[in-house]
Length: 144
Image 1 (cartoon, helix red, strand yellow):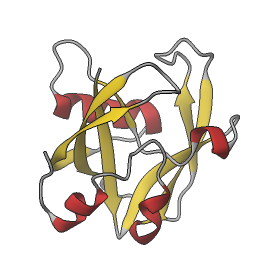
Image 2 (cartoon, helix red, strand yellow):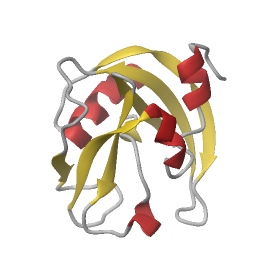
Image 3 (cartoon, rainbow, N blue to C red):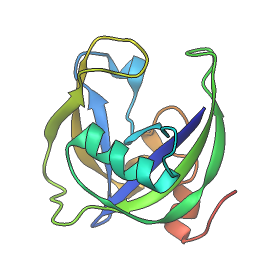
């Protein structure tokens, strides 16, 4: 399964979200991410997923790397994630807002989450392996 993961950075902070209806012990702290659709480039998917998951527009700054992530036992799937450093203009790191999906890709009912900015120094708390390429992203290198 080809996926994208978005490291949206602004003023020393990383854009994250936590689910509103599900406990953090199940979902953890996440970043905007999702599947690459047929005919779509990873960069296009990153821009689309950022908007779909946050309601905010952003731009790709650069590719950070590619990582394989085994989602088992949660799902019988191995994701190939394309990570991108991204930016949003006029972001406010003190802001929190609600976003969500009315038609999730895995057949669940609609869900909502709260988007917020975490200091990069605290981003080690990301769930589901999403923090794996933070080091190369911060160092300005690319991991393959």
